[in-house]
Image (cartoon, rainbow, N blue to C red):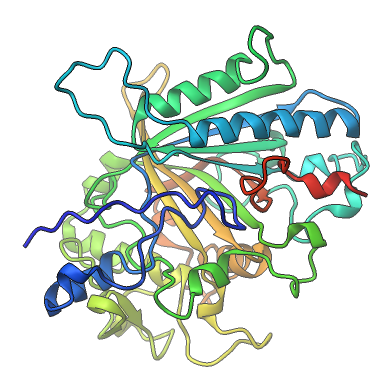
Length: 427
């Protein structure tokens, strides 16, 4: 039975910025399927408490072109007005054919993140007098195995994550930012300098170019509100007070070497990922969670549950108990939002440039992202000496071609006078 549920909408009046954990499906299934056990199980697996990513993502990185705290404050006020207007703007039906239907909303969200260089430069300068307010774990992204770029040379002050259900909506917003048409009408804005623009799209089946489901075991609020708990900073986290209800963002543009990948047989690909290609079911002997999509690894060194270098084993070993720091592996999870991208041919070659625009949102960047990447995924001696790194990177299927760390402040949508990072300028 195919049921078309009303799509969840962006949450514009909450404490968190839009586009991080919303749009989000309700935890409880709709009444129409309450008497259908199979439909309820499917809803629990695919929707309950999960985000429903919009169809398109555009990632814009930029630097600020101001030099005082007062001018930065003014810039953030202007950008906030632009963001609010774009998020609340209704679809334009001008020039639409009479019988052509358009939705009531394109579900637009714009998430803004601040880079570490706003707080302190690479030379240690406190350029805007807000160094003491820098989020605890925010820094320039370190270079790791699999990077083909230098994060210290590509770090930027700002990032804009533009999401909607129509590609031209994203293009229009990105063009406004890059061409200086986002401020007062008739005045060319020069207070930000756009450095990169990347565009991604989603597929209704959640698959990407590798033809495996992406984010199949993602965080959900259906279990003890874990989605919010793992993503948003709280007052007890040792962060500056203004950062409460904000979230860290680790952004990567991941290149996928498709010709090389497609030369592997299906069973070889399954061993490299750690899941069945047709169903997404883990290769582990035991499974858990809705529809059995979460692997169980009683012994992290037991190859009977799949190769130790398989992607899902290297990024989340799911060991029983806690580590030396008293932290369980499952406490190091993060929310991922991934969108395939297609850049056509690489300049001067006949090679296709495509892959995944990868967004990881965390409450604690060090605990939930850097630790899994450095101690597990790219550590050749985990879980035992000589294991090797994540085979998807070790074999050359994946490589990181861009990325960075950012902090997304709390919402500024719920008050007409509120603006991005407002609390930074009250000190």
